[in-house]
Amino acid sequence: MSAKTEKIAQIIQRNISEIIQFDLKDPKLGFITITDCEVTNDLSYAKIFVSFLGQDARTEAGLRILNKSKGFLRTELSKKMSIRKVPTLIFVVDDALERGNKIERIIFEMNKKSDLK
Image (cartoon, rainbow, N blue to C red):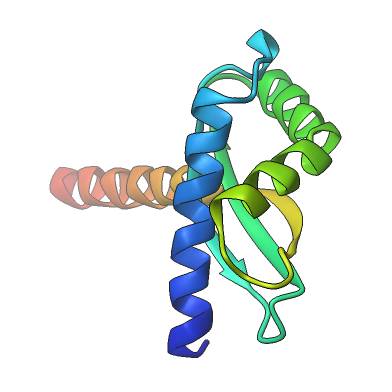
């Protein structure tokens, strides 16, 4: 990723986070964290990685709400940014934390078994 797209991705991540926190009024959304943003080289798409606090049902509901609110989020994003074309938003659940916890548990179990020998 070039420096320009990296910078735009950071700006989009920050702005989307603020818009969701302060402007999106949906109590069903729950606690959400924008973990990362990747922008294509032509700036036509922005993949927004999100993480939800809670169960899988909350994750599915939150993702549905975000996908339903794409138009509103993109409009608000265009008001905060000064680029010619605001990218199309794609929301993806970030499971890196879950994978990290799983790996940590596996390592812990392996260490516990090696201590018993």
